[in-house]
Image (cartoon, rainbow, N blue to C red; front, top):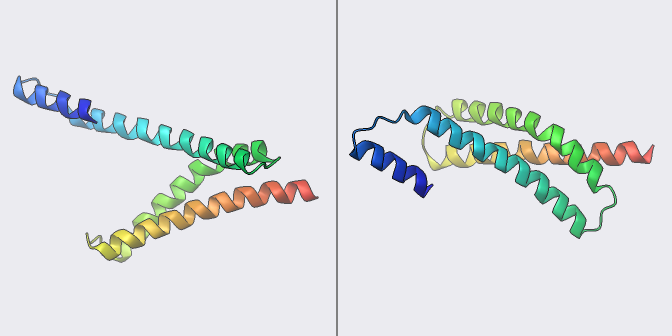
Length: 121
């Protein structure tokens, strides 16, 4: 992040025009990919520490479910913010975070349930 501010400062100071939109989009893209990979690595690590024999199937299931859950979380977050008038109050902020966390937690539970349900048949 410090590099970003340095590039923007140098660009503004020396008269070089830097279009911030591709730069910001790149930061969001890299952050999203890292968050996705860290979520999968975190699930793998937690299940390994717990000694779960089905960790590979669970992480594979989550690899497919996390992007779908992210899209659903965006829709839920926007819907909650829209219902509250897109205000910048603390209540709106907390409600959106709670909604997004609930959707992501439901995706993790569904992924795990799907794996356990398939194995028990």
